[in-house]
Length: 119
Image (cartoon, rainbow, N blue to C red):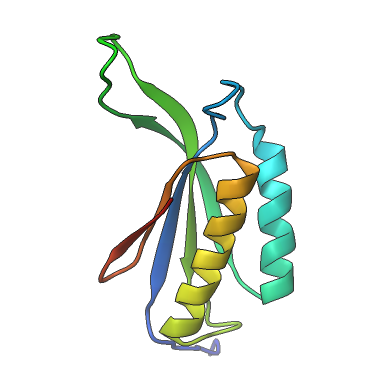
């Protein structure tokens, strides 16, 4: 029979846009992937990353306001489990690094019980 590891379920999802609001350039996914990879190796984490698109309201009257982005999801991975406070700390740490790399004014981190916007 296969071994089973059971841990307390805890997730955090980081939502970050990839468009530099100053220059209008889009941050390449490979740059983001490398930063995430370095962080998870250092902190012994497991995350998933998937592309997304943010569509938001605008005051300029344009037909479309939005940008490409990513969702980065952290889980309490049974191979290297943590407590919720550690996972929250790690999610916010990664979010701050992504905010700087992607030159974003604000990003959100969604936890099971709250959403934190870093600005």
